[in-house]
Image 1: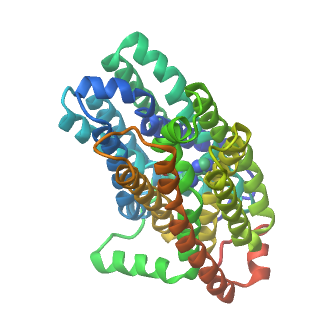
Image 2: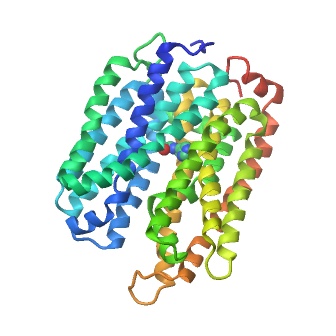
Image 3: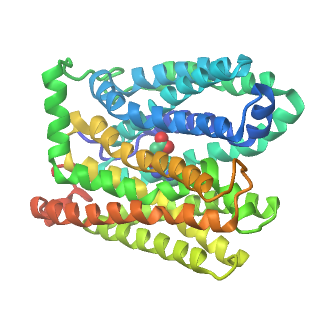
Length: 433
Ligand SMILES: N[C@@H](Cc1c[nH]cn1)C(=O)NCC(=O)O
């Protein structure tokens, strides 16, 4: 399959449809964040049971990445995207109608599964439909614009829950998927010349060989550890702990806590395209960019956590901007995976890499909860600033592991990658290393 040399109108339409589906997936994934109070009342559950929704979703998402990557390499993006969209739509419909906690948990598991089938498919479409030198930019743009789904989940969903009630609000959300499925059927082709791209049949030895070959390349491991090190802080803050940390740990008002989380999304928007351009122009320095960004995140957290009393509001804004940049920085991992694997292993390599950040986020979300409970007397959830300081400091362990691994695999990858060839990739057409 030849790489296109220009961006055709069909490439734009395929990308827009893929982006819309990813946007809807981020919307569904985040749609519980503003419904916490309504959920505790509807299902009569505690804060810990509410947090279980988020953990379960992250667990399913991370656990599905490798199987989904293999499915995309075997059946193509179009088929897997349709399957994911159908799952998300049905599951969100089920969540709308669920009236017990177990039923709601089952629905969230399937939302997580459908969500897990989205991003890797879109990455594969970008890598197939766009000229090689444009891939890093459009990959970043996809990740960045998709995050707007979280904004849609915050504002209109709050309105819908207040005005339409739980069932109607979630049913309307679910119906987005029906319209999109029709668009996928009409518009989306796996490649410029094929509606469906089918890879070789999957036998157990073939799957094992393909995964082992991807993992054996130090570039795939470098991508994994890059993704692992960069995004967990932003994910843990945006999905669960940001609001309580700012309000209870840093004595900010609810309005300021909301503004801080919104600014984090704006930082993602601003940083994504810039990083996409930088990665396309300087592929040899991708790991240096990641190391610099992680160092900045660690520094910002250290200033906030070491500040006597609670940190000033301006410093918290600096924190969310720097932490937010970690989201787009994690996308650099996919680019390293792309230039380290042949096309037929691209999606499964992306699946391996995508596990990194979500596994780290899941561990952090759980550990923060455990440390908060440990540092708070009795069974109260009235967490103190000191308890939050302990809990947030656990991130240092994850950063330390991630940074050591990024440095190790950067050295190993640079040994097997030819710099001229890699930088040539930015202007020629065939991914090689
Ligand atoms: N790091 C995210 C994407 C991102 C881009 N900018 C901020 N976040 C990622 O890995 N995404 C996968 C997904 O399914 O969302």
